[in-house]
Length: 303
Image 1 (cartoon, rainbow, N blue to C red):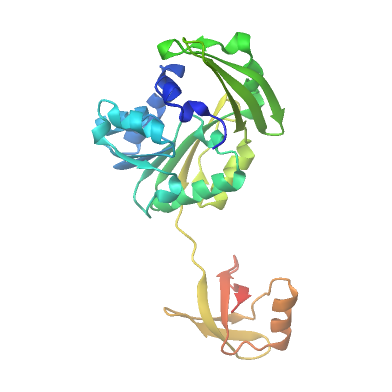
Image 2: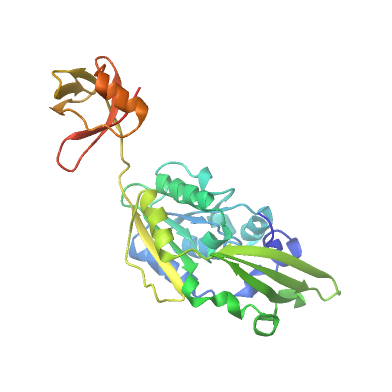
């Protein structure tokens, strides 16, 4: 991950929690875990472990995942750190159906600026949840344009250990915002972290969730933070049957578990599949199909 030295530099990681000591979002996620009676919770992008440990103290079985070894070192040393299973990595480390609640707090989805990577993260989280499992995360609302406040005068503060920090030079490139984070240490050392965050719209995030197998709860579009809550839905399976022609207009076939028959499948466009349909050489071929709303079947591809 380019930039964000505060996630890797040991001097900055030690002061990380003093960026936002109140962390009002922790109360929301803590109460959500209780409300859904979550047994096993995974905190993806757990950072220094504040939320994960708080949940573990309340009786949940918690796994905290983060790609930063420096962050996880702080998490393990915290009071209560032994209550959590810590994993260095990302959501791809999760096993199928391991958890009934997944969380990504602290705007961590914005740090994942590559859209394909975020969709892969959502898909991995979906696989780690059983049908009906819950997923929640937050992302800054792009309509609020909060980056306009990231100027030295408005953002300057002093962290633990006397480290002075401020934001500078925010620039929006579509939904991608670049900016500098300046650090000044008591010994006079200075460090500049050149960072970027993706401010995705509600529509983009909702569609990404739907495409990776989630049903999305209503979201307050006007809030400065978009709080997403979603439910994992049953995985779709593609049936594979062996087709035989009955006539020029009907077909029949069977899978391992049931027999099917009906009108001749509607073929997708494409030279290869259109030729197969026109020549009708379906006997003995394996055809992938999906059910249509009318109860028929639509062929997807031919082996």
